[in-house]
Image (cartoon, rainbow, N blue to C red):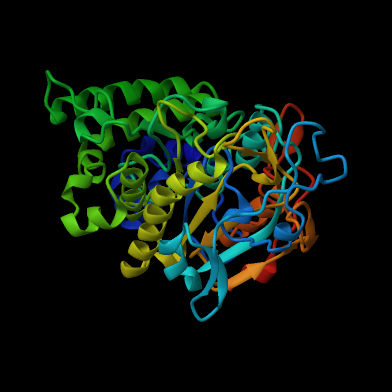
Length: 459
């Protein structure tokens, strides 16, 4: 029986309001598209800290001392772009083993090094294309073109929401300037209620984060009366249009928007956090967004993506020139905030069922580009890069996969983006092969016809 059929048969549905309170908010706010987990989940929510541009694997979690021996030599093979670079370029950074696990971490990531036993480093990530746009789309949607739903929308579609006053999927970005843009968090052909709510975090004053959150003319009680009237008309309209997902999405969105007046102003206000907590994260836009992400998942938001961009550079980690200096500066911010988030979640008892992801769309080349420049950079590299994951059922203190002695290609246990997505869904209690949506005459899924769960990194 569909939700609409149930409402019709139970006296128009109005008598069910009291029962819904007894059954809980999940019953009230689930849709007939939200199926619930296929098996017991290890994670209930996800925070994806996305480092736009692609951090360098050999400068973070994958040391390659062999590069010292071949410095300046020209690599061979189809990946190398002739006459563009000055040969192999070793990392100038020191690596040390940290924690009981002894995982090697770069000196530019001292905060993450301290909590590395809570993390898993995947050294064998790979994607299909070394260009930002298709790589970004594949990491977010599983597809190289902007025609598929994002992973956050798929998660919300599969599991529903845990709260009644906030969106289930939120995107935090410090600047509206971002490569590809809204296609990265689009619901695409999934019903409209699974679309992300995008928030610009350049100004963290709570009244500026969400536009028009309060009606300046009428009281919430009067708004409730108006919305009830509009929603009653909507339901009459919907009754004549069976299974119209766009209409259902609009009805749900209006209700969520009204409910946000009660909750959003409190949740989005990071000034409510103690000073020592705010200092732990840092005072940058990315740091404040990470703190807000923790507050959002604590309030029941299912999926949060935090982008690392700025007004001056929408791909900060895209270090084509002056890589060594740029990487050091970026890590100061990206390291402290990420480590603070993971440790904060752990202290609050939330890390066990919150999956945290730290990484970008690909890595950087082990060889240099900009032959004629003194401040050389590193180019895009898609055949081998690293990703850090923590919490949410991940086996902490582990390293999975290896790359060759130069960091050029995956040597053992490759993890394609499709495998990565399958693993994320598995941790959320979803079989990626069963999470499908019929559109245009065929069944679609996040992993298309690919993907294997990386069971070795699951606790």
